[in-house]
Image 1 (cartoon, rainbow, N blue to C red):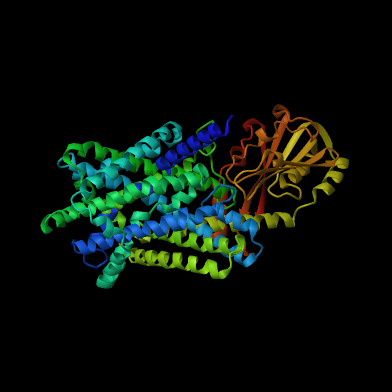
Image 2 (image 1 turned 60 degrees about the horizontal axis):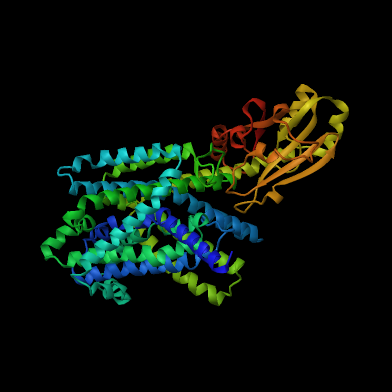
Length: 636
């Protein structure tokens, strides 16, 4: 193949990824024009609304433009996305990378807490995004159907219920429509903006002029700061660029943003501003209440509103899929109990469905819609989780610059300080929203943070307690061989640690007083990398007397299918015949105690999470008719 042909194939592949990224990555930030501009001019938190005049419109649009440039372009696309964990992005992937590269125990502990809290805030965001997106688009239907107002909430609830109900079918077929629909949506955003810019073209120069943003603060002070809490709605979804990097790659996402998505969004925002400025003062005061839908010409009003509704559904789908992916990472990295994970595509490993997360999200999203009842009300709750996660990403970035990339302080600190100033300003403006609804994502975040840290701490204490009463496997093998009867077949004893004798093996010997001809102690270890190569998958050791130790290594993005991994193993006494292999699992019943380690309420919470975790049989894909569970009691 010629170099030119190879280059064209490579370019075509990158173009395909760039289009795919438009369909998945930019859904959240792409639906912001539906509500971000109007919310900036509304009255909030006791501060009167901003006057609808050229100076304020120029100031708001300048803030939107420079927010997109600083937060999305400079911070995420050009800086943070370079900090990948073998191609994967997101708070947990970055946290795993830092854990692997950092030897400072105290720093690692702080970074873990920050990463886990960012993950917790993401779940709050993933509940609000579908609610506000679908509700805002459904409100647009009142401009098609007169008298539709009373039906907005019921229709939005029905759409959201249907969206969550089809998750079990997988997103493979629906996902093929994401790219074309979102391409059409962004083209429409740009076209609407260009249509209205004809009446007021000078707004383009006013928008990119940072002096207008500065003047906004100098003349309005407190009201301008309050408005930041709504301006940030224009960049919500920026963290999705980093989280979805593993699916599309840094360059395709960056190309899509810089050449297509950013221009389309800014053209629409400027078009909204130009539309409002082309009206009389009385008309502008009415139009600013919903400029996006009112700027649509009557001739194309129906298809554009339907297209906007489809875009919000796609944006919601992307957030739901992101929650599934993040949950899988959290489970593999030891921050969540095992859950049933179903793979919905034979070809795409990343397409998964987690029933517990799906239905939990659905209940919370619908409750948010029923409680807030309008996108304007939901806007009061939206933003604080996003800005909190963005601030944490900046702190993690500082650790990357200094500890991993070895930047000198004189080079790293100015960049980090600039990002922190912007993040703190946005986070502070959103803190004002707490009484009006901002408490919702914070409460959700703190509850999930308590669950994740309790599970992680409880697992460490449980393993430590088990190690205290454990017996070295080589010593057990020698003593058991001389004092037990051997029966035909293979017994695989699952062990959470890579050393010691599993409690199931000890109890089996104590009560049944027999051993299989081949005894395998198997441990599954999750690495701090997304994927582990097949050449490093299996580690084995022959302990003699028919005893073997096997360690299976997986990345935190991989499916842990034990039978599939053992299918071709021959170095442990021959191939494994699943019809003559029994799997023995240990099931611990935890007893709360006054031992130092965790508060009693956390011990009880951990015990509850243990009882409700998916059985290892399901999680490791073990054959259901070949599994034996042996229980024991354990204090932590």
